[in-house]
Structures are given as structure tokens and as C-alpha cells.
Amino acid sequence: MTDQWLKKWNDRYKDVEYAYGEDPNNYLKECLKNLDPGAILFPAEGEGRNAVYAAGLGWQVEAFDISEEGQRKALRLAEKMGTTINYQVGELPLLEYSQEQFDVVALVYAHFPPEIRSNIHKLLDGYLRKGGYVILEAFSRKHLDYSQKDPAVGGPKDMESLFSIEEVLSDFEDYEPIELVEKEVELNEGFGHVGKGAVIRFFGRKK
Image 1 (cartoon, rainbow, N blue to C red):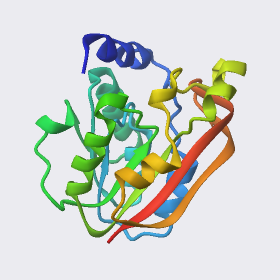
Image 2 (image 1 turned 180 degrees about the horizontal axis):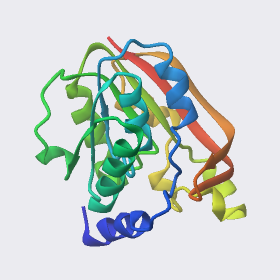
Image 3 (image 1 turned 45 degrees about the vertical axis):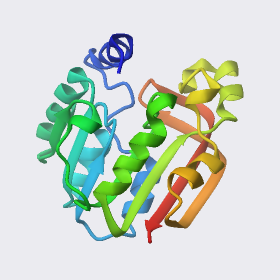
Image 4 (image 1 turned 90 degrees about the vertical axis):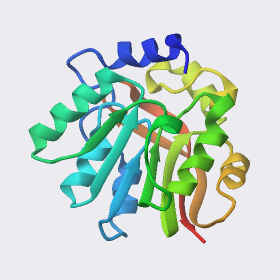
């Protein structure tokens, strides 16, 4: 990751207010209702709202991000909510996760730089056991029109960083899609995601 990329996220998370709020993502909540707690990994977890929520449900939570500011706020939120998460700072290839360690990988607006995204997804696939699940919500390529009209909705400003259904199917080819859909949603997540946007939602089971 470049210093510029790291600075972007540290700047985003350095304020007292939580950029995307303290409440979990709605799609994550919906998917976790259908699963028994186990081991779950949250890549690019930022300020911890989703990891802390899962820990409160009884999941064994691992999370990572490149931002120390994100980690600081995530651990503060976990303490506030009376939960425990293991949150590492660093890039995924350098973190010591094990093959088939997790029952779920939850990618909630985990927009990695496009040049490494597929490789990151393949690494994450290796950490997921057979029969485990990927939960993904991310901005789709149609979202660029929404964010240009209303910047408050957030999201990447370049097409290459956005998702297509075809790319999701390619990166997670050995999965049974329980749900794979592109849709318009109304977002109200902190000050970073406010308004209508276009997302891809994927809930898949590893074969």
C-alpha cells in the first residue's frame, strides 16, 4: 500500500466521530441471522462497527486494516460495547492467518486498490474453510453516477475500484451463491455513507 493510501484512511478515522457510524451494516446483520457463531474475519475493518457487532453475537472475531487510527477507534468501541476483538494493523500477506481458519469472511465496503483486489480475495478464500461463507457488500460500477450527483453517499470515485457481478463471480468462483444481486439502497451510515447508492450484495457458501 502507498503512503498516500495509508494517509487517506488515517485522516478519515482520526476524528472522534465514527465516519461510518457505530452501528453495523444492515446486510451483515441480515446474513449473520442465518448463521451459528464461529470464527469470522473482517478485512479492511476500519473503525470496527461490524466486528464489534459480531463479537456481541458470540462470534470469535479477527479483523485487520492498514490504519492505526481505525484500530484505535475499533478497540475503543469494543470496550464501550463490552466485547473483545482481535484487531491487527498491516497488509494481509504479512498477517499470520491460517488456512481454513474461518467460518465466515465479511467484506463490508472493503474496496482494496484494484491492482491487488483479486489477489486479496484469493488469499481470503484460502483462510475460509469448505462450507464457510463470504458476506460481501460493496459499491457497484453503477454507483459512480450516484456519487457524482450526491457526494455525501461516499464510495470510490474511479470505476476501477468499484465492483461488477462478473468480477465477484470470477474472484469467488468455487462458491454457491445464496444471494448475488446488484441493487439501489438507501444508506445512513455515519457521515460517510448517506443517501442513495448502488451496491452489489453477495452471500456465498464455499464448495
